[in-house]
Image 1 (spheres, helix red, strand yellow):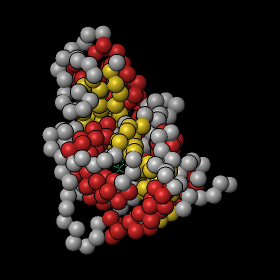
Image 2 (cartoon, rainbow, N blue to C red):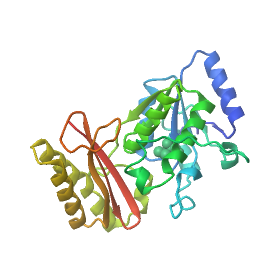
Image 3 (cartoon, rainbow, N blue to C red):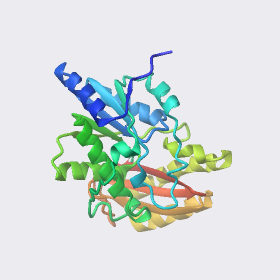
Image 4 (cartoon, rainbow, N blue to C red):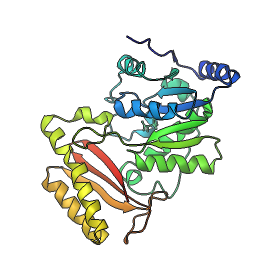
Length: 283
Ligand code: PAF
């Protein structure tokens, strides 16, 4: 068995490690995660390893990005299994701070991002993006990596992060990692473990139905009509509800009525309490 990566839990230890790496002339990469790692996360480590000498993975289940009634307390915490998975990658260090380390008593600063957060996940999960932007700002400033990578599955999150990094002049290159899919097309997600066998089968239909929508839109079907049709198809396939199906401009996330390139299809459908996100480029 490969050796587990070293774990540090404080900003001081993280910075000492990074300072040693910098003295060796090594570039630093950061892969922020909330743990419960799956092959999607491991692929982010592989991608960032092509860009930097020293990939660091952070594991922190961030309380401020969960709303009331969301799954913060039940969110899977599987550190030992995560470390074993990371041992198979190039991970140089795991940073796994406590809530007190990340949010010391008296901490009153929040990073909020306007416009791009005012639709989709921002409407479905009020306060979510302020929590994400705040914790990612902290992680970036604690680590000061050359490159940070985020999965394209959370496409709006990636767009929000790119935007505040640009607006705040944080000197890091933010890159997206491609969505990793199961054999039936379902996007890998830590929340897929909540699905029972029947629900898991239905979940695979999301990607199939969205791919059909892209084909229809490319063949000239009006966007609004295609969105409505797709929503109905998802409900017929057994999804409990559909939060949104929308064709958007990829940087601003503004919904499109007429197809223009570049464009991205973003969607969320629910099975019971589980929200399944997916998105894909319209090329
Ligand atoms: O995508 C996630 O896992 C989280 O939102 C992130 C970026 C690690 C911030 O907590």
